[in-house]
Picture 1 (cartoon, rainbow, N blue to C red):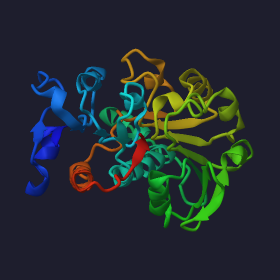
Picture 2: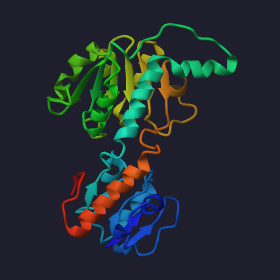
Picture 3: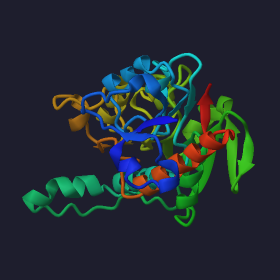
Picture 4: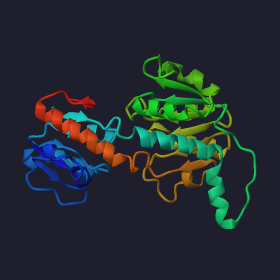
Length: 303
């Protein structure tokens, strides 16, 4: 079995799964022997050019991403190839950042940091996470990880997913209940995949339903939110936003979102922490062992 994968992943794999594995990184010249590649693990920050290599892999059977979201890969996936995502790999890091962004925005830590060079003492009373209602939109593995990290902050956590249920002590509502829930919560955390159904889901009508002073945290994908509508609401001072993802992305230096009051932007670093490589290597090793043994693969998104 011929495997093409990033060098930082290959470097940490056990010897029993590295046979036939060739290291290749984004930006490097395409390696020889693409026609024999059966398993392709694109770089974590794979570009369109990187993914285009799949069209030169006639023997390709499996693509294992290092990201939880696979919208960019699905768009160019060759027919008949099994696609697996990295569900579980980014749960800890992304959940950590979601809670961190919420705390930073609610407690105005971003504002304090902005005025430090001027030596300004911005003493004021701000909103705490305690005593708030937090709605997690998308209650998959990362959504559940966010809920676990919110436990202990003395806030009420609700969820929204395709199917209504109670999970890990959290009441999860059906997607149809979302419009009625929005006026009742203080913080909305987005962690849905980007699909035709979720693209532009957070539009002017969605934002208008959020209560005055509410906070929107987006750690999913930028196009889930209508950027112009969000800029309008935050410019008015009615809403705040903390965004790890934007549309467009990367956000151009002259984009108004950078200077919109009440907006905190981080550069899509939700999963890119020291926790990434150990978890990614464990997933890849387990998947390659399953593939060699002819066992069903985990995290199958499309086949």
